[in-house]
Length: 451
Image 1 (tube, rainbow, N blue to C red):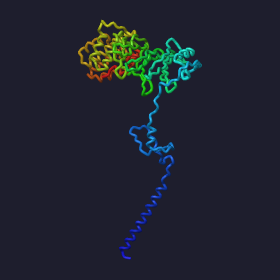
Image 2: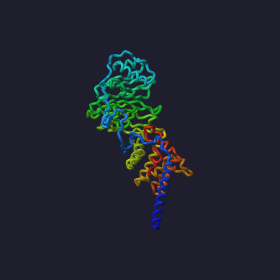
Image 3: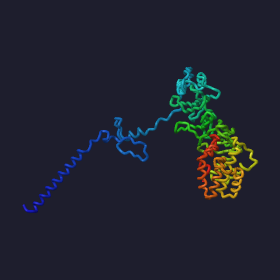
Image 4: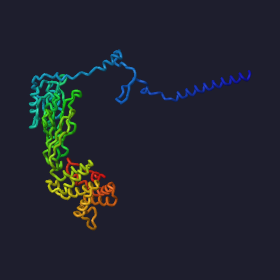
């Protein structure tokens, strides 16, 4: 055997050894892999969740055993759901079997539906509720077509067995009666049925209701809705664009003679200890083509100094500093203002607050009248020897802090930082502003010096 043959055989031997070694390694690796559990083995592709962008790909599997083709399965699953038949109602045969008096609100609803399904008439529902002793002076029972299907719904307001004021709208669908709308009110009186009719000339009746809700024992208001039946969703929707909560039940009227009915909120009360002082006047909600929105605000002149202050502070927050300054100045200097104080300490708190805020406004505007305000503060509330900030009325302490810092640093932001430190140790600066009831503004420290 020559040298060439010997070299060739050595190469073949090496290749065989490497091949065997590679096979052994693959066998060892396979032996080390765990056996997949049954639950992770391939199965039919599950129906995906509604994840945006998710796409399902895979064979269409017939699980019915019918042998239907994929095209037949798609046709069956794509069929429309049955359209509810609102015309098919149980015959009102005059069922005299008055249901037993229920002991819960839910039982009352169930009994009324069963009574109508068994042939009870709309006209006899009042007798049923009367037998249950569920009717009061503010109760009502009437029928109106609220869905536009030509079949009237039954609208009733009564007191439930638990003493809860209740409004129900019952209607028939596919041969049975069902609950279309349910609303409860705090107290025994049912939600007020303000009006039923076509409010916006869309050839469909709407229902205006107000339910009583209580934020606390001393503050109850009325939450009003204008409800229209939405056929696509199969329920009533509120077409007011914002919550409407009032101290009294609003009314409906065509105030501008355009054949569209408006929701009118008469602001008659000047307030109480729970609400604080309120502006009287009227608010009008009008149809804008898609919903009812607040379109007219007509407020009477303020009755209290704090209402002038609140308006000035609103202008200040809107960066209408000049307008705010004019109102602060009127509170301090206009003798023709026929206003009252809500609290007995108003002559001091209102006056000192107006001085402080007027100083802020004039400093921002670089108005030379700042020197007049400063002189009045120094004259009316002089700093005696040994006095500290705690010895001064709180808003005078804020005014001195602001003015002294401005004199030293000529920087509005730095001056307000000094004021904030005083507010931290004298929280009555906020307490005296935040005591005017729930219907008036709530202040935070930054509101008092926002620069």
